[in-house]
Length: 295
Image (tube, rainbow, N blue to C red; front, side, top):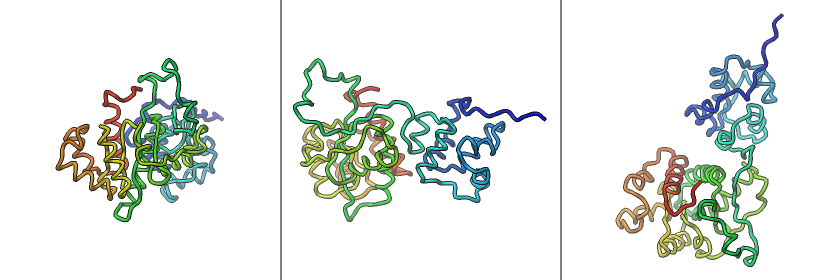
């Protein structure tokens, strides 16, 4: 009797994980859809082998593939077994909401004494190596959209992880939510606490970009300070609150959005998927900014 050849997940080409339909399944954590795409592309991998690779029962795989079991999974342990078993590359792991398997740059803005942070000029990182520093401002004020903020927090967490941005934020608000999401879902080994900065000026003074979700009067103060310092402010109007009010104010005064061209400014208010589309615009603006650090 001929034995079936063992499927090696290491043989899966990178192009498969870069496919749009695969990326969409990973982003939604829809393992049922992911398994169907995987088995369809690699018929030499049986459901039994897929079960062995991901440490599941054969019946679990069958139910996911047939759609008789809920395809979307939130259990981090289950997702980790799938990612490890299929040997997902780091970018695919990030889409799934897991920390990269390899090394990555991440700057959670650790609380170090000021005198230790004052390096000699020769020791300071150059513009090409220093991480981009962003301030994440805003809160869940009464006139904000909680669902949009939830989606944006998840997507911003993934962006911060994948790009290695340094983040400053206040002791409460959406900034600390992003950092908490990173700690809970990505579990990076070098983050156990995050420093919430007191004082609106302290939150934004060292940032290169100010990202705004929702917010109340305190967020408006941070926006005003950022504009007085010439810092780009990127607000998601669909999140409501101060972000929405600032967006419409900037529509009437072009000076408030000098860093955004007309196309991207309009796109901020036309996001079909407020989380994904907003973060894509944020990443484009940061990547194209000549003053921001390069990869």
